[in-house]
Structures are given as C-alpha cells and as structure tokens.
Amino acid sequence: MEQIKLKAIINGKTAVFTVECGMTALDALEANGVTVYAPCGGAGHCGGCRAKIKGKIRPISDEAAVLGEAFAEKDVHLLCSTELLGDAEVEITTDIAVMEREIFDSADKGTDYGVAIDIGTTTVAVYICRLDDGRVVFEDAFLNPQSRFGADVITRVAAIKNDAAALEKQRKVLLEQINASIGKFSSDRARFSRAVICGNTVMEHIAAGFDPCGIAEYPFKCESLFGYSIEADKVGLDIKHGAGVYFAPCIASYVGGDISCGLASVKFDETSGDALYIDVGTNGEIALVHDGELYFCSAAAGPALEGAGISHGMPSIEGAIKEVQVKDDILLYKTVKDKAAQGICGSGVIDAVAALKDVRAIDETGRMVDNPLICTVNGKRALKICDGVFFNEDDVRAVQLAKAAIAAGIKVLVERSGAKLSSLEKVIISGGFGSNINIENAVKIGLFPKEILGRAVSVGNAAGMGAVEILTDDKARERAERLARNGKYIELSFDKRFGELFVDEMGFDI
Image 1 (cartoon, rainbow, N blue to C red):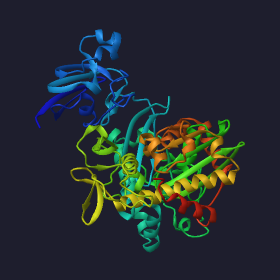
Image 2: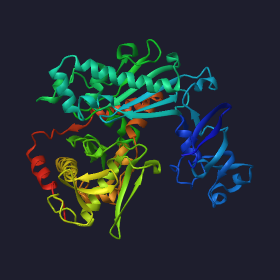
Image 3: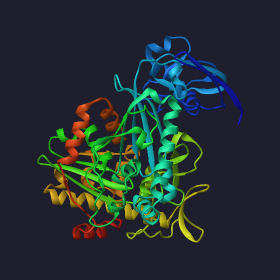
Image 4: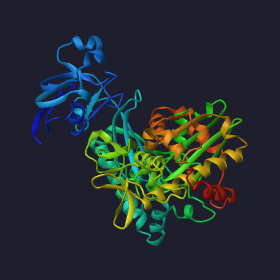
C-alpha cells in the first residue's frame, strides 16, 4: 500500500504522520493517536467532524448537503468521508480533536484533571476529564491483561487461590497497563488530582489488592463492598501523590461497582414504572425496578458475548466482524472501521447465531446440520464467514450457555419482584457489547425475551460514564451509593427456579 504524508495541525499543535493512501482523514488521525469527536460514528451524516483539509483528497459527492453553510468556507470537508489520495494537511481549531501525547503543551496549565477507569473482565476503559467542567478530553480502551490468568473471574480467583503471589501479579499487570494508558495523555502525574475505579466486585478487589477468594466460595462473601477512597500510592495508580482513588460501591459479590455507576448514570432511581437494566458481559448483571423497589441478580454468562472463548473471537476493535447476515443465500459481513476481517466480536457472534437460525443451519438443540453455508474445519462443522474466520459448533454451544444464563436470570428477577415482562416500560442495555448489538437478533436467539422489542435502548458504556460523573459531582456519587445499598439481591447459584429456566432457555425456537 502506498504511503503518504499527512500534516495535522490540532489546536495549534503540529505533527506529521505517515499513513496509507486511500484512508479517510478520520481513520488516519485516529490511527496516529488523535482522538476525534465524530457524533454519528463516522457515518457521514452529522457534519460534526468538519475540518479544513487540503491536498490530494476526494470528499464525498453529497458533502454540501451535510455541511450546509459551513461548506462555503474554503477547504472545509468531513474528516470521516474524505479520502486521502496523496500528501495532505488537516487543520482543526475546535475541541473535536485532541492529540493523545504531550497534550499539555497546548492545554491550560491551571486545569486539574481526573481519571475514571472501568475495569471489565475482558476490556478496560480509561477516561480522562477536566474537573472544572467534567468534559472528557481523552479516552482509551485495551484488553484486560489479566486474561492470561483466565478468561473469567472464577478462573482468575482460582489462580489466586492456588498461588498467593497471583493476586499481586494480576494487580500489577492491570495497574501497569492503566498507568501506560494515562501516560498517553500526560506523563506528569501531578496533573491528575483524583480518580474513580469501577468494575465487577472481583475486579475492584484485585485492583485494590484485596483477596477475592471468598467471592468464589459459598456463602460468597467478599472483603469489601467499597464505596470509599484509597490513597493512589497504595493502589499503584500514577496520579498526584496523596490523591484519593474512589472505588465505586458494589452491590453484592457478583453485582459490582460497574452496575451502581451505570444505574447512577441513567438515573435508574428516578425511573417511573417498571424498568430493566442489563449489562451484558462475562457476568450478566441485571437490575429491575418494580413498584419503586430495586432488585438485582447476576448470571454467569462466560466471555463468549464479548468475543472471548470463541474460536476466532476478538474484542470490538479494528478488523472485528461486527455484523453478519445472510441475504439471497450469500453471507455478508461488516467489520469495525471497515478494516480487513481479523476475527469476530460479540455483536457479530449474536448475528452469526441468528443467521444460522434464519437459514436453518442449526436445529433446536444448537447442533449444526447440513447446509450449503456449513463446512468442516479441523473436524468440526462451522460457518465460514470469510477467509480465515469461522464460527464452529463449539462457538454455538458457548453462546447457548451465555444466552440461557442471561435469559433465565431476567425471568427469575421478574418473577421474584412480582413484575411481569409485559409490564416493563423501559429496558436499558448497557456495556460496550450492548452499544453495538442488534436487539432483534438478540431476541431471535433467545438472549432477551421478545417482550422487550420496542422498549429497549442501548446506552453504551454507562458504567464508564457514571464513573466520570462521580469524579466531578458529589450527587452522582451519593446516587451510586444509595442505589447500591437500597436494593434486594437474589443469588442464583443454588436457585431451583433458575436451574429450571436455564435448561428451558438452552434451546432455539426453530
């Protein structure tokens, strides 16, 4: 691929990047550490990423309709839809973009910053924001490096139980990666005067250096439910010396601070009528409000719905297959950033199973059957999505286990609260997976009940946003603590009804 030069002038700060010819200006900037605000996700219809672009370029033909009066300005184009055909220059003089490294050369020296960290079992998200106005100025995400100790919390806790040194090893690799992420923004730790950490209860224990082993054994007791600050130096977080790191309040051993933050962010305590909140991850954490009362449960879904534990699974990053469908007997797919397919992420996993169901390539038990789209790879039947990426019968089984656990958890919570699926006025689906999911396909495979159609909304990473709000707003912290303390937790591990429903939900309605 031909290499070209892109000169980027971001709020007066200049850098020159070597990029691939044919990339959009948006992709070229983001590939080189410039975070760009693109409200429509780069779809080319909001006009939010307009900037001055000069050189050998090719904008989209209907750009004037999107830009309106702004198009009259010389050299103004959409970053997301302008192809770079040769050496070019981009100039941005608004807050739509920030360079990740050495940003403080052009930032207000008197501004304090805070760090909000959402520690997921599979993915960690880091947000840096100004403390004066709460504005997020930098975001980063990466695979949780603890995955080398196991894909889920149970195996990571087992590693700690078997080796006392494993707790410190898991804590250290996590904090090193978080600190490296913060360092992309600035290496001056004195710029960061506070931090908030949220995650499931095990993740918060490991980050704090607390033994999580009691969480994995009956009666599932944990050392702490948090909701208080620990000195940054004790945590190992590279922020101002003596600063506090607030650990979000956990609700129970398997319903963590990520849920209290997410519920605070969507103001779940102000919801009128019956409502359901679902965070789909390695653990399916579920909250329900009925007649003003809060109920919680957690269903062990495993990592399949986050792209882990799948033969060609991967996180939702560049090159991940995010959409799959069969049209006129031809399998079609889309990838994140439209890059060459490298694997399949959680939303693509849901679509793949839905596609198998649509063409009757699986039976009601989930077994793959003879079909033109099915081949054999390494002795296993599989759906070929593209060269090098297959979705096999073991992957279907992993999804079955995950969707059965979450679907059964939802029904138990609804039953125990006295609510009805038909009475739900709103269903909030949270998490990075939830922001990309095709809800109709999720219902089709039985992950969610059909009653949620038309009532469900995806809110993205509400946990991370809640953590950001807690950084700058005491009322948000108080709301998270109140939500965590005032609900009723239903333990599913030995619940007979959950076991019955889990078996019922394993199958597919063919």
